[in-house]
Image (cartoon, rainbow, N blue to C red; front, top):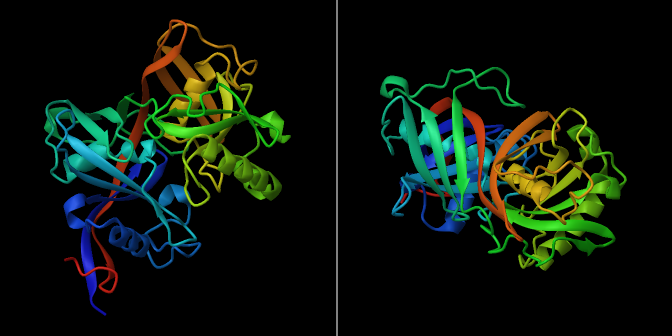
Length: 362
């Protein structure tokens, strides 16, 4: 059977990886686009054996790039979360780890030209409207991937990609606190429902009978916990005005506990049907904001920094992630921006092939 060839760059972005496409090389219609991405990544089978997915939610992510028509941005970044074992694609969320590779990928694709030893690229996250400034290392006008930056969950060292997120409050729901409350009680669990870069329902690990220090593997094996968490998440999604979220990866779910390795807070993050092996960039911003906000479920779990900008060090399942949060608190807490350092690396490029029956390229 004839197949359709689609150009792509395969990148690791932060602690995730997947194909990066030009928007012009893919179908405009979202239903057809979803079918193409399912075929390309092999969704619907645990190993993604008939595609280029990696059999894990952090390796079935897709970035779709184009030159931005927005007056502020240089590049538009449209994200797709492809399921592993189901033939589903979620276009609602964004992904900060995959975003780490957007700047380098845009240069690789010719969508943006280096401007000096360090290139600043303004990125609009199409799914949520968030604005992000990425600083990419381009000494002598050449993109480089080797460097001294190290992030938990990725072996070795790479060139740093500095990300500064603006306009992240209420990016999905329109509100910092989508329920209007600092705390809600859902099925006996006290939650803070917050929308900063990623809409999340956040709880204390102890309220689920957990320590908050369990490994990702231990949590994934605890199906009773997952069943209870999912029921709470679905109800929280309704309270947040997000409707029926049973088939959506948002809101994400997070747990927090007191730090035990010198950080600000211990956290675990869920994608939501599997434990994240590290920590999502967007989720890190939301959990850091929750940690800094008086009156949330973080009260009593940490020694809260009171000066801005504040460095919040989150201890996750594979190490730590630092979030620098610029905020104001003149009677009402307000997040101004959040910054992180990530890394990215080009792994491959060429064409991925999908059956012509899914899309003939026209």
